[in-house]
Length: 178
Image 1 (cartoon, rainbow, N blue to C red):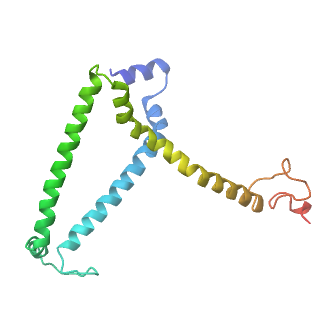
Image 2 (cartoon, helix red, strand yellow):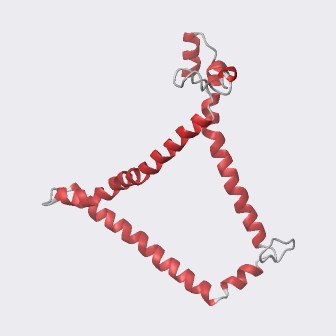
């Protein structure tokens, strides 16, 4: 017997009931992931299929095969862009890995000025959250104020406890609203 069956036998609950109870968890996680993946894949496949047609601005039916790709790769701009992608892409990755490796080695050893290096190395990671919160807090406060004003104009629940009885609300206190 598996551990799940033994546990279910001890508690007296069937395994199917436990699995049924976990369905909302799986739907909460997997449904958005599958929808996002389907959305991404469907548009990628559409783009690939249109690239094999004689379309320019508006998609048209027809089939030209690899003619569009051979025409693209024959241009001088494509060659320049591809060379730049290789040089700068590989250079950026190698430089980032080497910089990270050197900083990690320096932080792992006991060196003079370790606290300064640690501050310079880790400070940008922490500052981004602080700056984001500082920049967005006035906007959030303004929207919260607008939301409060809108809830006064269009109440969704009865506000007899917070507003005067004379004002009433539009759902359950219509008779008191004159």
